[in-house]
Image (cartoon, rainbow, N blue to C red; front, side, top):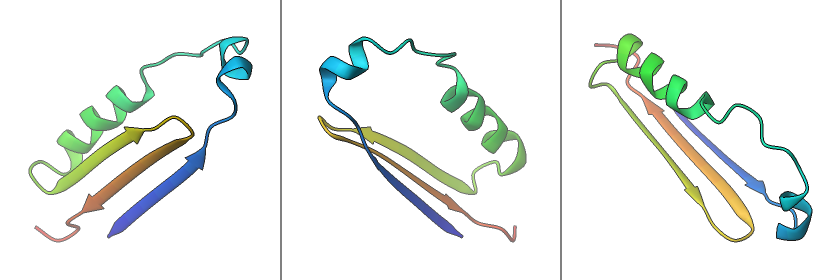
Length: 62
């Protein structure tokens, strides 16, 4: 299974005035993937100036 997500990011000035919440969601996701799919997943994120990109690949059958 392959899942890819791209999301545009608003202007930096608007982001600076927005409070950030948590910040541990991606870390928790990677921990859960390692527990549920050890050595059977690929997960990567990329932040650019105007976009956030996430890609997840899962090998569903061992």
